[in-house]
Image (cartoon, rainbow, N blue to C red; front, top):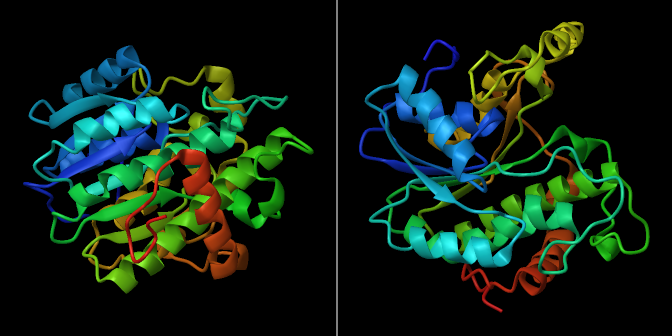
Length: 311
């Protein structure tokens, strides 16, 4: 696919699942994986949008091996139903946890399970999903779980004592907390997988500052307006398209250079070629991660059976 300059290995015979795959980073990640020969399961909460994404992908890759899986990460019941389908897979070599809310609500909202909506969508749903499909990943010889981090982790504190934002809510904090929680969990899972001798690797990747107006037009999937393209082009010195933002994710999911516990992002932080980076201290604080893990198991209603983590 001409969208990507970064080289990746062939992936014939491998299976990857990408959440939030009907648009943005998830779509371009899925397209490149399929282009390298993998069987790709595109997941999202809207069947019609998933169908449009598959049609757009097959228009460019007629021989692509793809399937779809409906899952709403804000709903633990939906996550459980989707996980049950994945448990029947013969194999799963990679899981890209991309789905999430970027445009967060101005006022606090709750998920159907009573959790703060942004935390539920961006973090708890993925945590619950991993807890239920990890045995399938462990049947592969070298599976990867890639958690989507964010530059927002460098711009916000982390209120571990009010993650549900019941005392004070604002949209920015909700997003930043959800992404710091995602990164912290990704690194904590890496520690637990390593301690357990698991063949699965947990890696965190962030897309830099990747925006719609600098992304190739894909009808039905990525179709920013002329005005949006003009405004976003003004930010070109420090932004990139979502097709380029997918590159660190793809390296984390497939490259032999990406290792358990790594953190990958654009070399220039906001844009550029994929590079290994140093995460924030909060994201890698083991004490914070242990407390977060306990809360996540409580709120998601799922214990993750790795390295003594079964609760």
